[in-house]
Image (cartoon, rainbow, N blue to C red; front, top):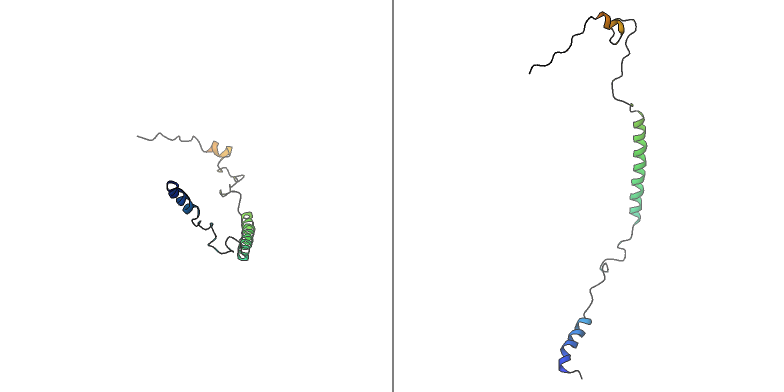
Length: 104
């Protein structure tokens, strides 16, 4: 027999040890939980095909984009004395006016 002084702690220990353990995580889900399906493969392949088509389409469109969006520079007309930037035009125009400082 167990002495009365030890009976209570031993009984408590026996109850704690024999209690039902909680179920393992995920055991309440079905056996198919976490496995991939063929639908996922189809979705991934469709996304890959869409990406390839998009890249090809954008590459074709980017080839048509000009290098610069600046307006094209017009070359000065030869033989015209009034064309800006020529020596004859600056000599004939006379003295240039300087800008005055703003009042204020």
